[in-house]
Length: 289
Image (tube, rainbow, N blue to C red; front, side, top):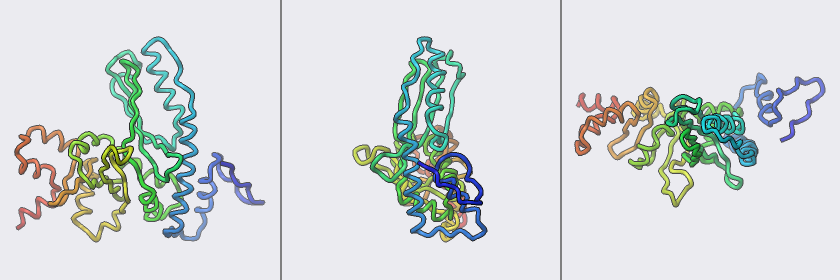
């Protein structure tokens, strides 16, 4: 996307060639910023267009280099994916085992954003490269709806796409690490904490959507102050790098720590399992009655 020409006497925009640079320069004025719903919708549209342009470049990337030796081929394939996914699209990179490729049990995980050509939403993709067979597995993990992006721009009161990604990415990472347990339980909705709010995901059946979790909106901590029980549960889940499952009785905090502790509880002991996953505020209220 072409950058606007600099006005005479103005400070040149930082290099990078994207519309974000111009917007960031404008945001540095002394006038207070106020992002209403109309501006948030416009920002979302431009944000998606920019992310889509970067996604197309990923689709057009060359095939990974053909290398016969397995260890060298593993290292080359990892370098290939990291060099072809723009930094703005990358959500996380995680490794298991030595990354020289000599240990066959080693693997490398990736999460990155993809944008469909005809849809105004983001899709978080997960990919896994295994050193043993150099398998490359890719699947959709979560979708962030256009409405959720509107709310992020509006409630964060920002026109900087980086602020939106800084809010989104940590929540998507948590969902990635817990998705196996969440899929088996099929909680809906699932509240996934972000640094200053929470993404609200609904569960989607395979025939309904390309990903099992769809973020329908984003709620800031500030707006949750009207519901102290919800905010307290969100803060507890955030501290444990977990999520909240919503049930008729309230919330359940689902984290790796609590899932590990649940292995010591019999599966038919529903009361003990409920107490384990219930937020501490809920247990305190029960004791006070």
